[in-house]
Image 1 (cartoon, rainbow over the protein chains, first blue to last red):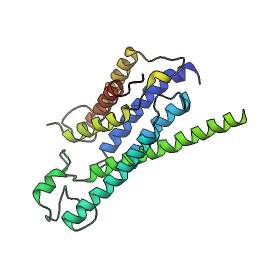
Image 2 (cartoon, each protein chain N blue to C red):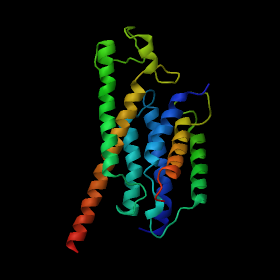
Image 3 (cartoon, one colour):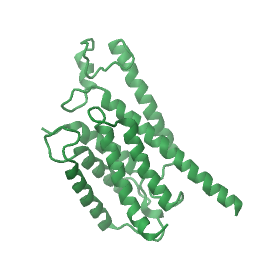
Length: 156
Length: 83
């Protein structure tokens, strides 16, 4: 790729990642959410991988990193659902907002998202989904770029 | 009153992603300290233009965006050591 692309791709990737994080954090009261924000973060990673190449990209995830955050995303979502099941009686019951008044106030305080909207666990679910989606989509692209490089080396 | 939620979680997500940004292996282009100053200025202008997203209207800056940028750059300088 050209020098100009290499100069501008990393700053744009960082800005795209920030926009993705902002979309995740506004997911409970604006359009967007975990999946959309995660896809925006992944687009930053994809831009970097495409411009710099798979071996030289400044934003590249190791196998362990992908494994850890994919697992945290899935297990965190299920754990929040189970908290709702055991504390409120339903899977994914919003223990932070507690509109049915069935959860003790100590548990409600723990899972209350600290902003003015009384959203409860919804922002936390968005964050876990966002983690899972950004790592998953990035892993797909990194794997495809790796296969392409492997095939090109094999042909040579 | 500024909401703590987007600031805290934006910073944490930024830390998670920024820890993997390593500029040491880029060939024929180098990113010096001045490059990151430009990124910070551009990011702050963007956060200002985005306004009080998502509609908290207590602070004229997108706090989630700004804290994510700070988290990414801090984590890049502290944790991503190969650069």
